[in-house]
Amino acid sequence: MPPKSYNVQLITSNLQLVTYNLQLTANDYSPLTTFNNPTIYTFRMLYKQKSMRTIVILLPVCLLLSLSACNGQADTTKLNVPMKTEKTEANAYNPLTPQQNAVLVHKATDRPFTGEYYQKKDHGIYICRQCNAPLYQSADKFDSHCGWPSFDDEIEGSVKRIPDADGMRIEIVCNNCQGHLGHVFEGERFTAKNTRHCVNTSSIVFYPEADVKNIPPTIVLKK
Image: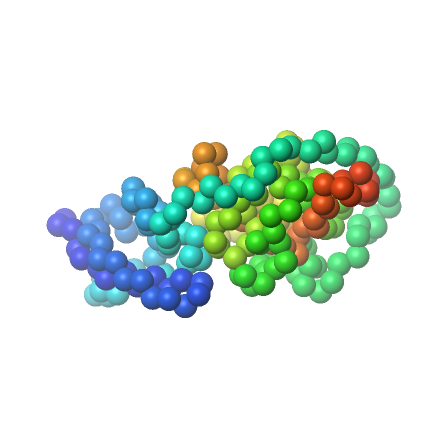
């Protein structure tokens, strides 16, 4: 089957329209297609009718443009992570706001560019909002321009990966309380580790370096 020409219109998160012309073959008609192109990595096809010539795809700007390599990890110094635990009765996790509950418990997503942490560059540690488990070091945080906090690594053993219900993405959850954090993506080449944990602000709490010693014990429910 000869390649077909498609005008692909990408609507970025700041509502700018970018148009590309792609030559697609029969092998490219999959729900998730990856292109070996440093500017465009992943396209999700929302419509697959053969008669259609324009595919409109909504993606965060971090998946559209890599015009400048996102290597902006402000401070690579790792901190000592407190490993305190506190066993408690069921239903004794930290209280949550309706939005935090929607994200951590019901797997909702914060609106992009609205959280307080996506541009934060302070040195410190991010913990799980629900159970206080340390999850990420600021040394592993980088600016992906996608509107959510991005990390290319987690504190060892703190984050679990599970297949997302959509059948295509990989969900990340707190390994202690199973609270929803976001999703992890690989192959975008933003950093040398080639990994991006896309994390909801509602799922995490930041402790600056001077206050790391005050991180509360991780809440572990009694079985």
